[in-house]
Image 1 (tube, one colour):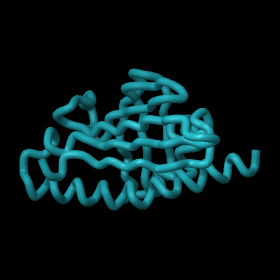
Image 2 (cartoon, rainbow, N blue to C red):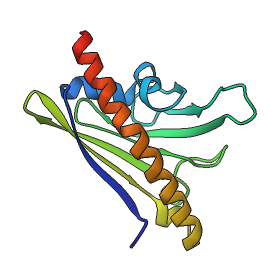
Image 3 (cartoon, one colour):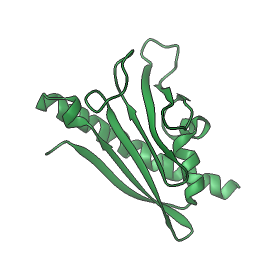
Image 4 (cartoon, rainbow, N blue to C red):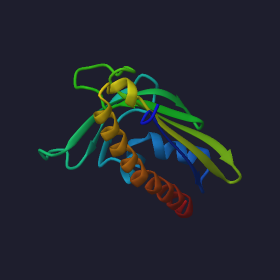
Length: 154
């Protein structure tokens, strides 16, 4: 099915334990993805990420629920579900980061799914899919650069 999953493989010049912290902890997430992050990187934990100034009327506050926290191998969460709802396959997107040691660095396998489950309308699914592709293609290179900076300054 078209517009069902986003997949990326990215080589990062940092060890898996460093990359894991970059993708799972608020202080590091803020450096490459949302403007604000409030979450505990533990399975079952819920939190929010904010794009924009948290107090501004146009800020986008997005809930998330951590599904897997397996340092330094895998971090996954469900996000973009309704306020007051629990994350489920039918109302959210599933993001998974798999980290594979590769020489002195890490091969990151990124996947986002849930488009078909969340949107039955083809046009809406395509729009959301395209928006997420654009977003991840912007943010994932920032993750790579930030992780490399951490290693250089350590």
